[in-house]
Length: 466
Figure 1 (cartoon, rainbow, N blue to C red):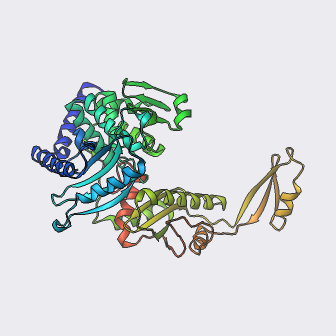
Figure 2: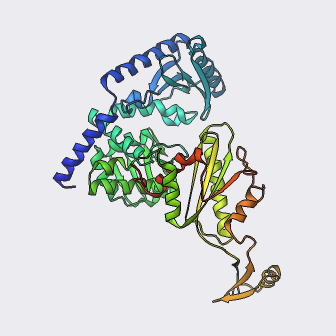
Figure 3: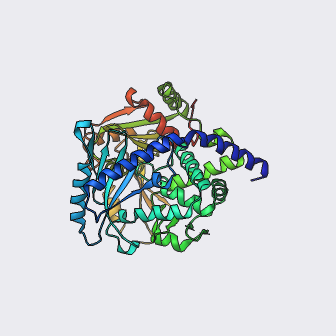
């Protein structure tokens, strides 16, 4: 990037930072409330249990309005996982005073922990873990989290903390921030490591423009290895970021191929033309979402078939893999019956999940079924017998094909069988039987979420936004 563009990029960064960095008053309030949580918890736990604040607040990389607190109770390594979990839940629950309107929820990672909602407005995750000196001695993956905080705080400058905030917000604006299953994006810790690795947000974005995957980053050595096939074979991902506290962990494991590619597009757009629009994207509008959705459906010339169904009241991290697997099965069903899918998008909106398939307008009255290569096998009779009631057989080069009437002449008929409880097996928390099928329309209550999800899927800057 030339000097003029670099100055413009810095001007934009400073402008955005004013809107996303906690004010001094907010920072003071957070520190005050966090200290109160820690002091109250110290009155509850035994003296040999260490209380440690971790996460973005402990590393001063949190965004404005983000006052969520992560507090770890570090038990001696000799305490069993079962005992640690039991005591952790007991201590976390005792932190809450129902008379003050405070409450708690039991959440689950590798073991249960307590999320408390306190009178001060603070939401805090109270997590039991083992106190360890190295990743080799951890019992569960959460044990290394305090070591992440130690590494970041010993490696980052105040200027880089602001660059982490900017990177988080940039990724959030383009729908790729967060390591949860729905997003498949970049975690806060990964953002911190990327800034530590490259020194600044601008240098990271410049590097992202010319990525040659598979690529491996080593933040502890500030080293990058392009076209690293060895790490790709080991981790199975084209972006690998080695955890400084655990060399056998890829911090970028949750980053999907789509999110990785979108990062590159975002970086290229901003570096080539640093503007507020290329940083923020176009944003979304709730007032016109329904109008924009239907306008897009009409202009696209595609057919939109949406399944709308109830889901169980469980964590999104439990529900999302099931929704994704179901969407993949539907795509495979369509493909196997001769129907091409342009794209699909899935999302959770309240107590319902939605799977939307966008297909070219098509009617498939018959289909070609590929059979054996005639020269590679003598056993063609089974294929001929199986498809003998069809419309005939064809030979393309040396491969035998059967021409058959399609069981499903249109995509809608496939969805008709799906909601009758056929074709798709029921998942533990998902049942498509009696799901609602919507053709080229969306329920009014889901119009905004559909607009947001389609915008994120189709264009990194949204479509039709204000």
